[in-house]
Each structure stands twice: as C-alpha cells, then as structure tokens.
Image (cartoon, rainbow, N blue to C red):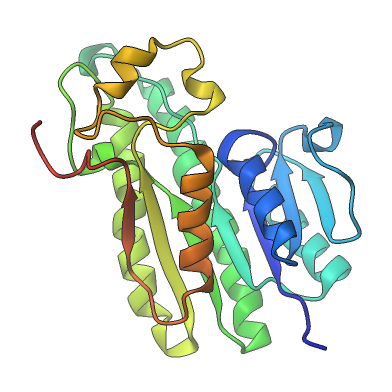
Length: 241
C-alpha cells in the first residue's frame, strides 16, 4: 500500500482554495488547509485526511504552525499551494503605501513564509515535492480600465520567484510552478456585472473554479514540469482583442 502524500493549501476556506481542498481529498491526498478562521467553516465534510488550521498567512508563525501540524498529523509535506491572495484595484495615484503593505503581507510575505517552511521539510524528506502559486494574467497583459498596478507588483514578483526557485531546487526534485488565472467565478466577483467580466478575455467566458483547481493539480502531479506559469485565463494573456 502506497503512502499517501500531504498537501498544504493556503486561503483554503472558500473559492479556489475550497475547491482545491475537495479535489485533493477526492484524489486521496492528505490535506492541511489554512485561512484566518477556517476552523469555523461548515463547507467541508470532516475527514481523517483533513486538518484545518486557523491563521493569517502574513504572520510568520502561521506557516511554522501549519507545517508542524502537517508533519505531526500526516508525517510529511509533499506539496504546497500558495492560494491565499489579496487583490483590489485603484488608480495608481490613489494607491497608498499602506495599500501596498497589505498586498505584500498576504501575496508576497505569505508566499515566502509558507514556501520556506515547505521546502525545508521537503529537503528533510529527500523525496522531492511541489510548490504551486496562484498569480494573475494581468501581470502579462494589463487591461485598460483595470487599474491594478500595485497588486501586480506582488503577483508579477511571484511569477519571477517561481522561475528562480524552480532553478534553485531542481537538483533536489522540488518543482515550483504557478497558475495564472484571468477572471474566475469566485466570491470576489459576485457583485460585478457578468457582461463586463466576460469582456475581459478574448474567449468571452468566465473561468470556473474547477478549471483553476485542475490546473493546480496537473502541475502538482506532473513530475517533469517546473518553472512553468500556466495561463488558465481564456486567452487573456495573448494580447489585444
């Protein structure tokens, strides 16, 4: 009988994160999910293969606690999905340094804390591993009227770090990739007009959560892919439409 692998998922309480939890459980992974108040969620059926840990990803202690819990409960950390993210738009001249610090705390510092702890554990295990982060197709192809410059500093930084880390840890068989979505049908967009959202990609469609989840699972389980930024964005990264 093969030993089950364990995945840590940040921002796991709703949207893409919740979809990731359910799909990895269906694929017989052990799952450790974290968000600020995830222990209070009723969205998951409790399972012997599911551990929920409260915490703010921007706090360094959270990553340490979550990683320790994963090892204590399941014996390993074989994959990490950096899904927790903060996104809001403002004209560049109206963004403040406090806005940038908020974006960076979740999007960049959370990535650093969790990735460090996960990779340290993977190195101890000497059996390789996978890190997948959620970024944004706006890093490659800004859209007129979607003023997200400071948010994209953080997301674009993740794309760059993904490629650098993929090279740095390739000899240890630790693969580092990213999924770059466009507009996804998540609670973030529940108050936005559907016709407007559909106009933000050349295919004129909104991506279902499961399509992003499937991209993450594909990269997590693909032994020969590293340093890849996989666009699941209905063609939004291609250019003008």
